[in-house]
Length: 592
Ligand code: FES
Ligand code: MG
Image 1 (tube, rainbow, N blue to C red):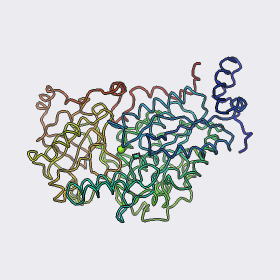
Image 2 (image 1 turned 90 degrees about the vertical axis):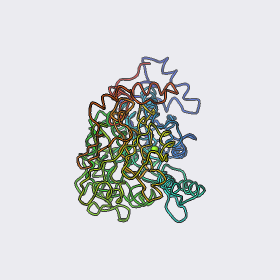
Image 3 (image 1 turned 120 degrees about the horizontal axis):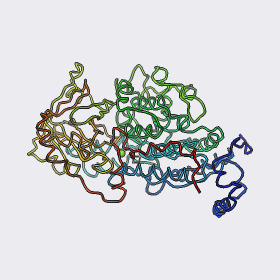
Image 4 (image 1 turned 30 degrees about the vertical axis):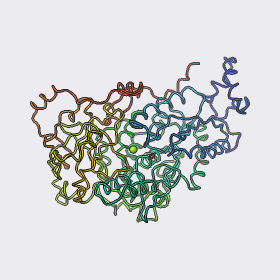
């Protein structure tokens, strides 16, 4: 493509910069963009103006190298005949934002919608990385529906400590168990954690960041192979250049998110999530993205379409390796190649490359079978999310790819798979309560207990906290019992390897069944039937309802108040209620 190639239709940005009916407004819009050297001729040339939604900043270290990579995005945009305009998005730093970055996903979504709708942009590059940066950006791109492409920042290089691979987050969950069991010192704990972060980039495990970037690629919203390239590799900068070029072409070809984000694309993403051992956070985020894309995705789709897919990626926390090796083994395209050959995904889905998914995947078979397994020889069968329901909740999931063999033997009773477990509930109201009381001897916690946490959902926390992966009390860890069944209305980190029943909806703070369970109740989990109930009779539950919903902290900021008033359940994506009524709003030019 040359500089001369122009859109055959009038571009949206011309409504601002080249509006014959409003010379005064055109002058007003033009003048200030010139003060950093942009010329009126460029802005009035009819060339596509491409926004770079910049998610990197000092407050978002996982995405910070996007500040540098944006130069290559700009080069690509310019070379393809477009004009780049870069702007910041609301920071979403998973590890640091209190009380949780999940609170801010919908805020970042709102902010980006206003920018994409209200400014003279013809297309946008969504720079993504840390967990919520991907879903918030794709949710906004769908609402506005201008040509959009995801550019991932990529994971950090592999971490090493004492000769072992140490992966983001996963090393912390594993080290805290070892520390509690007295196997390592505080210094060793801290060193292993710090060694897991050797370079720029996002988490190098298959946590929520790597998962959501893989989901963007599986949906067809980024160039082939984009998700897994490590942040520090030269290919990352080259991918930036290609993405910049392609963004301009997307505008000229008028390919929008609504052309790509179909139900088939979302079902492909659910299946890829199972095969990579992806994060449980993919569940609310994909639900939210589907909702804003106008696609009906049902909570049961995770079970119906995802559960039977085997684990193919040997990457922590479900497997052994980290991001570099995964990328070199072929990354997301190699996983999708396996699923396509096995007839599990829809190869006909259109993508931002302008080709179908099947065309993108040609020749992408992995040659590293230690890291990406053939479909017929997986690391684990049935690795998707088990969907559960009962009188404690209408919906919850359990990530089967991380369920250890010892846990399976103890609780799922394989190979017979009777799969029914009854345990005594130990109930915590929020994580402070858990930390305060988990080692309290009077609770008498043993391997027949189920740990329950509530007040950790979207309204309760607020934002929904990653706290359901509660570790057993120290005395059990010392005996080698590394996990107990846990249930909660919060989430858990995508880097966690715990067999939790989580994202329970409706949450306790909204009057869900978890509000009425008490320590000492028996909880029955039937893994085969997907049932989870407290064995408490209805009259007793009614009596407990009179005691009221367990208290949660009050609103600390104005946004917390607005968020609580508007947020839906995790089963439903924890979106802003009714915001999905606003669709494809770029079709109506904003008033001036
Ligand atoms: Fe940002 Fe994991 S904390 S990617
Ligand atoms: Mg997290």
